[in-house]
Image (tube, rainbow, N blue to C red; front, side):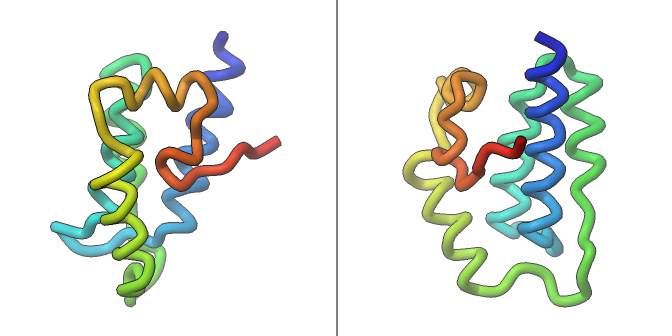
Length: 99
């Protein structure tokens, strides 16, 4: 089971690197935080959220922000989000499996 948690954590951090999170109110930041909240313990959730940093001066493009907004309002939402992600429905949040 810890192998799944490790892969999920790596997946989340990879997602963060791709999204290039920047400002408060950024839908991509909100999306990433929602995914972090699916970590199994509060410590891991906090660690994941604290790892959300901006690796660029520009932040996500408007197009990237629109994609995040669409995911938040359609498939990457709901009380069963963490369960769906754990079952492998990564596409719900715009994620893909890493090997």
